[in-house]
Image 1 (cartoon, rainbow, N blue to C red):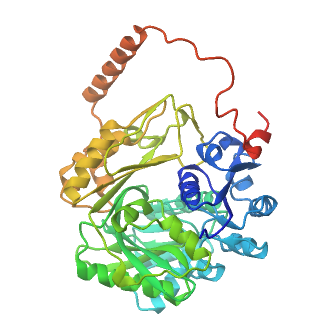
Image 2: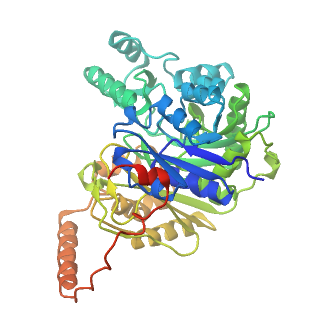
Image 3: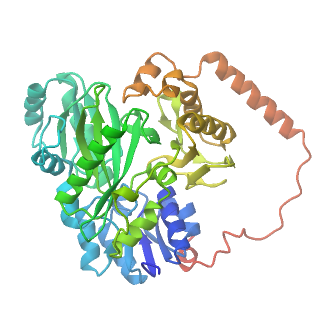
Length: 502
């Protein structure tokens, strides 16, 4: 039995495509929304219906609550899936959906307020006796207050957005003279990404592991955890590589962290999918970091190891179904690794690389999954997160998973924009990664030693190879012209896509 007849997806890119696919397998019709910058995005082309919601800036489109709710009602959707980012952890959006008679596929507004706001979550978790990273339990009111708190905590400190996640609105501050500008940048980024400039301060732990626990909770009081994910490979607090399980977590630590995560979720009446994030030191002491009250970007690695489709679980739980299984029924098999493919140049400090994708060849073979929002000819816009795809592999053990990821990355080809694929290739080959010696300082430390950068000679070799390839291509016979007429995409019968002016 399908949980809903029609679902509106209030997001874009690969996560919108991911939700569309799960809905289609369940027989659920989908409604996509898009800004002017996304009129020909893959999620628009794949959905059953697609409708414009405003200009390119997210504040005028993907963050416009009234416009999204009105679109869902006008198109006859029964539920709204927020994806991740944008309004996924916005209690006001969840309430607006509920007031309009729509099911919000996520936790209830009260739970979002209790844990989705990072400062409120820290207060709640501390009351449960779960260790938290030292810092403020309320958003900062002024720069003077921030300076006082930073002195009390001791530098370095971390500025964090009170709402949202994904590394947005975060700044590491090592010296007092850096604080004012870091606060200004963090507030601006938080307002742009989540519609709220509120930030708070934490003591920055040096080189911990970032490990998170996936939970599922139904509306009948049952909560289970699906194990942990290792998320320590980051740059500028944005995750780049994730794996499940963690090479550092043993069975006793998994049990303790899982129990703490379920206790946090149960204490606030949490429902649907969520993630409790921790920092873990070398002695396996863990500290609560935050709750992500939504589906995570890295959820596929948990899916491959547990055999559960988390988006389908979200849909079931949002429809009021029971989990149907307990903690003892959850098992883990093998190892999964995910590499996030961004339109960024890793050899120029991960500078964004928007543009037209002129060529695309995705990897395949056994136990290789490519969650993507792109296609050949697609224009990568400047306005949003530059995530293009998530390459995910499974192996019987970690060694096999690393080898399979290296093979899949070698097959991946994207032309027209720079991507992080070369970076991932170098990480897979690095002895510290292969040995599981990871921390949140992994990328920063190695880039500082130029351990992951392409050296000048290799760059010259790559350039020569590209020129030779272009020369060979130019010498081939010109292919016959394509038959006249519009492409199959242009002939799409989707009314929302058709009505958008060209």
